[in-house]
Image (cartoon, rainbow, N blue to C red; front, side):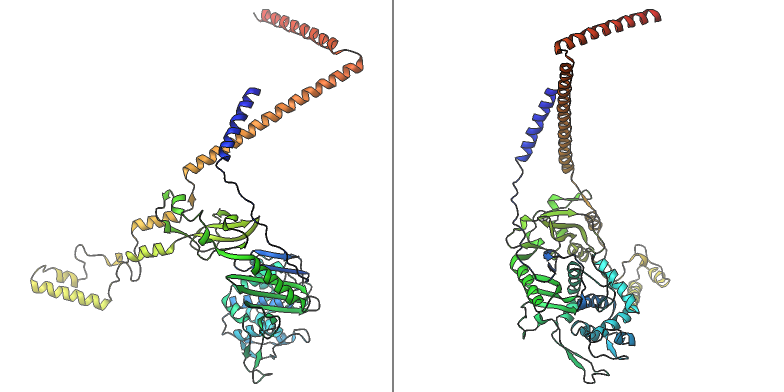
Length: 544
């Protein structure tokens, strides 16, 4: 048994060395950048395209958000309403606010469009506008708060609960910098929100308090070139302040193809402007955003590496990488430093033509995803090349029928053709109207339909891959078995030596030598063997 184990161990070792000879040595990727700090209690900066956290401090601690709450309010309103809808300001909307809180001078009974209300909400931080929009969308501010919490859950927020649409003090109204970054990311991916929030001034229409209208400006000083806090590349943001929340700030900026979002909670003025600048500078100076399709080589030659439904693709354009998929990397890193993982877990929120998802990690940190998609242009071009011409209108059809009948009558041939046509019967070989392709629709050839059907099926791993995987699994199982047997053998040997030592110790304690004990055991064994042989002999005679 020992020799067998040794031989199998030697074989396993040789096999492992052979497999290891073809394995590339992976160099450690550069460390993730650090070296930034903020004086606020909590701060974060993320990549807006991928959602990757570049740096954070106390990012899951809960704080009061104050008026940056209005980012979520605006996002929901934009998703639920048309900008030209009319909002009527109720008594509750105008007066259910804290005394001295920010407002846009709108009175009870005034009517503004949703668009005007959104500008008042984001630029002037008008609390009455937040209440009026909430009532317009959900019927009450309480019902709207429920919508805010549902939206927060949808975005992946786990540290957040909203109690009102404005952000005024409430013990049940809180969030974290991480959750607020997720909300801001969704908002700045919305073109309407970004357009409104990036505006530097806006003229509200006349109302009962301001008959000449009111020009409003954003409170975010990094948007204003006239202030020392102006930040080149800024897209927009939102300020907030209450006595309990302190100064809060959300900022979005874009440079060199990189879009960042910074959030500050429980800050102080003017330091929170400096904190935000430090976070944005850190992101732009240390990271780069790259398109995965420009660098990915492992999944690009899909036609030679993968099989769909048993059909090996011979058209490289059948599957393509999402041209908009991006990942974020430290500037000191290479694309090859990122680890790619292929997944077929596609959700409803993913692109409709996605067949797989490729997610990238860098030092155990997810840095973005892209999709492997069917090339719709390929199928559309195949469809257009086989498009069936549309038939003419009823008048044209009647004209052609009459003309054909006239020509047939004048030539004297096919005399029965005219009566048949008049009776509405189709001559032999004519196409049935019910079988004609409707106008504007296309008919794909069977080859294209089969190809598309197979291309949309899930990936199938080639047989050779299964063989390799099976071999590796078998070797691993064999190695585990050998290791188990060796360990058990060693344990039995150790137990035997332990028992032997214990026996010698007991013999020494009793005054009997080891030789005397062994002689005694041998005598008993001989006597026991003789009795068993004699017993078997007697039983044999008895049964005979």
